[in-house]
Structure formats: structure tokens, C-alpha cells
Image (cartoon, helix red, strand yellow):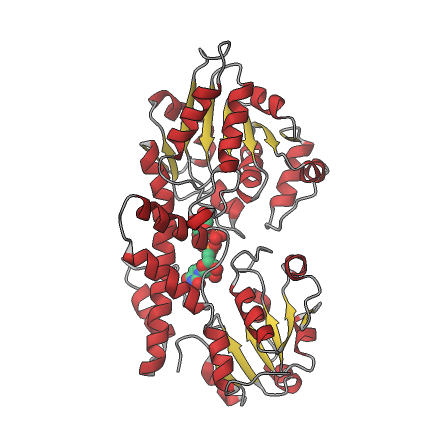
Length: 440
Ligand code: UDX
């Protein structure tokens, strides 16, 4: 089948390459000329395990193409996916300008029936806006052309994006036309083989489902962080509690890891947008506001522990920092807790020696040559002449380090761990002071 995907970010590129992988003829389009030139040569502008190979294989097989030619892109696909960004706009609401620009472009060039599918996370009612915009943009020669607008939110996680797309938990199809549902069922059939994963519903319900899923996951995390902070006052180990409650199948083990806060391109933005949506209709979402506030506070927790340890004076101290990406297996540092920590440490006149397996370039891009911040080539190098070690992202390389070497290198033999990677008893036996989240 012929597919066009607008937007070559995480969602667009993964959608395009996975649909090509199962045999479709996919054209990915972006207004960023440099990005498309790179992609055409098989150079991927983001780090996602497996994606580069998948893009190259499908390019070679002639199933995946890249273009900046919008007219050609609209001609190409019966399915026109919109997978562009919806960054936080004014007052936290999702900025829809990119989505609406694409809808406008599709309408301008449409010469026959098209299914316009929104994959971007957009507030309830956006599909209606897209529909009106397309209808209004059609001119007297194209007014007769039929089109459908579908909400088909994407639930992929960075770092596991290909697996999430190829084997989704569910495929949500929000439409007001049963014929469109049938066509999308055909498109998604290769991802729907072992059991029925497609859930069809009204467009607005599908749009809301995406926010509801992210809000539920973010709530689980903030809930656990709240309990972890309380556990510290009660001399209770939250790790035992986590296992104790996770074993209840109604609660489950996933997304109950306490830590130094959630980051990324979705949770922080989507919670804000949902709070804004609620406010717009006059509903005060006390729970979501609390989820957001708890998370903002949680991103300060490591710094607070550091200040407590050093009795408020860290001027001239050097901190090794392991992990900059908002989570492992990505180079994404959007809303990353590492940034809050770096900025707090530098503001307190400390120095930071940071290392991340993938996110160094991103940090360099954001901070440039910021005074007091140096980027190291290895995790060991970050420890050289450092006073203490901070861990913000749970990359696997950090799980089982040589504690004796760490002890030897650090001036103060103290570790501040925002991801609870180690056993407190083990570090105690090595005479390393260990601060983590919610553990005595
Ligand atoms: C999330 C959703 O999982 C995905 O379905 C949606 O499509 C996009 O948003 P992503 O942002 O890639 O995906 O990352 P995710 O793995 O969900 O982690 C988000 C944040 O939560 C990370 O900062 C992570 O460290 C944090 N987290 C996650 C915790 O602090 N504790 C947990 O138990 C799980």
C-alpha cells in the first residue's frame, strides 16, 4: 500500500520505516532540507537502537524514500500520516501549528481520496480542526474530493521504539467512518497477527486515550516518588515496598520505579497540555497538577541530598555525573533530570564532569562551552579528581562498576544515586557513603 508520512522525528521515522519493513511503499516528507538530505544517504538524525539498519535496508529495497516535495508526497500515499511535533505552546497547551500546516498542505495538493491520519499527540478536538481546515482549503476544483481524518495515536517508547511499533500492545483507531477503519485494519494487519490488537473508537475518544495513557504512567511514577520520599522519613526501604506492591497483578511492576523524576518529550509536555485542556473546559484537575508538581520537586531531590551532605557549601567541589539522557538507550535530553542537576550544581559554584554513552553531543549543543561543565569520554574519566559521583540515568554500564576503583578515585567516597542502582549494604561494607531514593 502507498503511505506518506509527514515528519521525520522519532514517531515519523519509526512509523515510516516499520510500515516499509512489512512491504509498503513509504514516502517520508519533511520541510527540513538538511535532514532529508542526510536521511536520503541513510544517516539517521537521532539515536534509536535498530532504526538506522531498518532505514537503510528499506531504502536499499526501494520501499522507503525521503523528500521535501510536498506535492509529490500528497500524490503518493492513500494514507497520509501526520507525525510532526506538538511542542508546548502558550500556557502549556500543545502548539498545533505544525499539525495544521501539514493538514493545509495536504488539502492544497489533494487530487483524490485521502485518509489523513494523526499520529502526533494532540488535544481532544484536533481532528475536528484538521477536518474543517482541509474542507476550507479545498478550492472550487477540488471541493468534491472526499477525505477522512483519523486519530491513530502512537504509544512507542524511545529506546524500544521499533519493538513497540512492530508488536504494539494495542492499535487505537479513532474514526467516524467504518470504511476507513477497514482500510486501516488492512494496513495494520502485519502488526496484528497473533491476536486482535485493534481498538476502534470515536475520534475524540482516541485523542483522549493517548493523554490518558501517559497521564496514568506519569501518575504511577509520581505516586512512587511521593512514597519514596515518605519512606525516608519512616526508615522504610521503598525497594522492598515496590516489590511488595508490584507483585499485585492489579498494580504490576512497571512504572513504579522511584527515581529523580520523569523527563522526555512526552510525559512533561502531555501532563501540562492535559491540565490546560481541563482548565479550558473549567475543570480543575487536582491530581494531574500534583503529579506535575511532585515531578518538578523530584528533579531537585539529588541536589538537595548533595547540599545536605555538604552542609550547604559545594563551592569548588567537582561532581562526576553519570547519565545525561532522560532515560537509557536514547540521546534525548529533553526535560532530563540531569539538566536540572547540572544547572543547580553550576549555580552553586561547583564543577561537573559528565559522561553519557549517547547524549554528550546533545548536552554540548544545549550548553556549549558552559563554564564549570566538562564532558568526559568515559565513565572512568568523569571520576578523575572528582569529589563525589552522581547517577541520573540507569544505563547498563553503570549497574556493576568497580567500586574499589570508584573509591580510589573520588576524594569524598560518596555516591548520590537517582536511580537506586546499588545495594546500600554492599556500599556500606565498602565504606562508601550512599544516598539513593527512598532507602534508609
Ligand atoms: C512515554 C510512554 O511510555 C510512551 O508510551 C509514549 O508514547 C511516549 O511517552 P518515553 O517518553 O519514551 O515514552 O519514555 P518512558 O520509558 O515511558 O519513560 C519516561 C520517563 O519516566 C523517563 O524519564 C523514565 O526514567 C521515567 N520512569 C519510568 C521512572 O522514573 N520510573 C519508572 O518506573 C518508569
